[in-house]
Image (tube, rainbow, N blue to C red; front, side):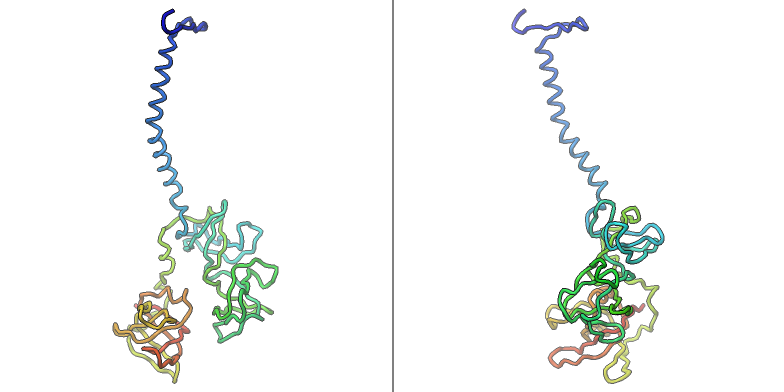
Length: 287
């Protein structure tokens, strides 16, 4: 039979050289090896494109009216608020068909009365550590987050032994994935104040003194410079010159950097600082 044996393919009557079969299979194998990296790259590219919006966090847009934000990733959890169509949300994570979002300002949140003092008509101060913020005015409701002694909260309403407050900065809810459309990877767009929703005031740099301590000032809000006071995060420039330090809730004031604003508040004297401090009670953008 020679150096290589032959075998008969009886069903077809064709005689095939085993060596020829080996050579053919070897060629097919090497072609497959050469194509494998290309196939891998194509698959990886398709996968990356399909999952581009799954890099967290990202800015999402609500696609329907009255979409519920819930306290957990299940329809049995408490409803925290309803969102409007085209409303922006910051998406931070995903669990199956639910997106985890930063709670909108309209979401309900509660803290029990015995752990806070009411400073004024708008502000509460926490008097204990690791106090739970809840989805309802009940110790059996879902925990949305925790606050610590000295933290300031924005008062909304009073209900029995509970205060309703605006959601704290790092508290989250859940929205069904099908109602959220990817908008941008730039989540800073979420914090830009909407000019049309802010009252128009004259573009004046005059400081109005209504009494000894209360002031109304217009200028440009900026983050403090590195060599400023350690405990101060903001300053107000009047006529392009630093003039005041500002104290207030970070997540509120951050939205107005670096816009021209009208600030209302009270003067807090501190002779060791370069500029007087305004404790902000109200802020508006001007244009």
